[in-house]
Image 1 (cartoon, helix red, strand yellow):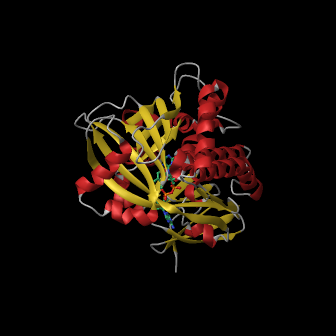
Image 2 (spheres, rainbow, N blue to C red; image 1 turned 90 degrees about the vertical axis):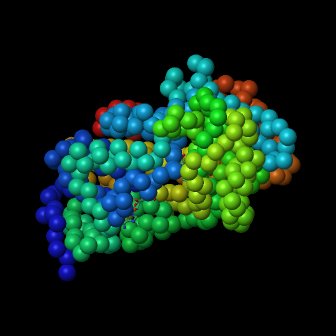
Image 3 (cartoon, rainbow, N blue to C red; image 1 turned 45 degrees about the vertical axis):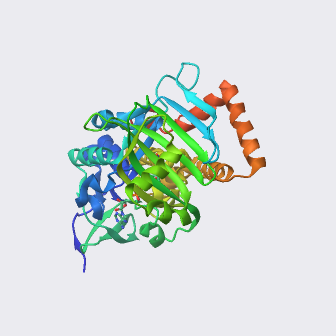
Amino acid sequence: MHRTVTSAPRRSLLVAGGGIPGLALAVALKKAHGSALEIVLCDPSLNAGATRHRGRAFAVAAGGRRMLQQLGIWERIASAAQPIRDMAITDSRLTDPIRPTFLTFSRDGTEGPDDEPFAHMVEAEPFVDALIAAASEAGILLEPVGITAASTAGSEIRAALSDGRSVGGSLLVAADGARSRLREAAGIGWVGWSYPQSGIVATIGHERDHGGRATEHFLPSGPFAILPLVPGRDGGHRSSIVWTERAADVPALLGGAPDEILAEIERRFGLNLGRLSLEYGPNAHPLAFGIARSFRAERVALLGDAAHVIHPVAGQGLNLGLASAAALAEVVTEALRLGLDPGAGDVLRDYERRRRFDTLAMAAATDGLNRLFSNDRLPLRLARDLGLGLVERLPPLKRLFIGEAAGLRGEQPRLLRGEAL
Ligand SMILES: Cc1cc2nc3c(=O)[nH]c(=O)nc-3n(C[C@H](O)[C@H](O)[C@H](O)COP(=O)(O)OP(=O)(O)OC[C@H]3O[C@@H](n4cnc5c(N)ncnc54)[C@H](O)[C@@H]3O)c2cc1C
């Protein structure tokens, strides 16, 4: 039998999942509505704190940064955020003696929407710590338990918690990750597949300063990204790598002694930044593509990886989640300000309408990019190198790509434009 935790005031919101999109949504809505909206955020891993994210880092696009600034989160993490000022893309085989750079993006005043960096690299640990602190200070009820089931009755959805209690609200946001149990429980289908690749993540120390440059080497087994981080506690230069490899080759690559693993990293990383050291990892993540058939069910909205999982080739998965959090916060706010039910069908339809096309477009683009580059077929190599060369020589096309990567193109929710809800 379930005991009741809250007496479910008319306007309360339940969030399942304390990843970055779930926490950002909760903070945005609590800041906008204060005591008029009770928010309960449940995640069984909340007790473990942010240490479980150690070694992960994200490229946060300019739109996401503006949103975090508006929410007062950015000032908490700014010192841990490394601006990406410059980006270089190469396309070669692992054995090629030199890797010609086909495309560069930089801030020289002629490219990009304005002078702000198109992305920052932020380590996950301080990022999640800052969001949890902001959520707690804002008065969000943080429950270190899972939501195991949910059922609707009239204008309420009731969620069963893993400790036997239950909690009610107008809307349940399922931000419970790629294998979302709540998406399944709501009967929402999933279209997806696994890539025959793994994403290996590690933090690398190096002798020389990266100067804010990100590099992506497109190699036949997949992209190898070098992403600049702020200096470590000892002042040492560091970068994060996201190394895509054929999944079948990963045990052999990562099964050796640390110096053998480092030698494999060096073959791909190059020696431009001097001698390398392994600071954290490597950890391999299976890679998949997936998109929910719908982003909503009765009084349920999907958010983050629960709605979409994409290849990390362009570092956009979390950015899509932040954009969706901004759009969901906006439609819920519009409903609340009009005295309407934030979990009503037309509010959730509006959320889906605002996010579905962008999400599908980004999912298809990242899938296409990975397929185009993760191979060694000569005609494809020639075509893509020609394409990269063309973009390099055409500033308007380059500006278009930078705008997309920065998350600043198209119809953006207010928070992504840096405006209050
Ligand atoms: C190798 C790699 C590199 C990446 N790099 C980037 C990048 O540079 N930039 C970028 O934008 N994106 C990147 N991504 C994508 C990014 O990691 C994800 O999109 C993002 O972490 C998804 O966040 P989420 O909160 O939706 O899901 P998750 O991070 O999976 O969080 C889900 C949360 O839900 C909780 N939960 C699960 N079940 C329940 C339940 N029943 N009740 C309550 N809580 C529950 C879990 O404990 C967890 O905390 C990368 C991905 C990979 C694999």
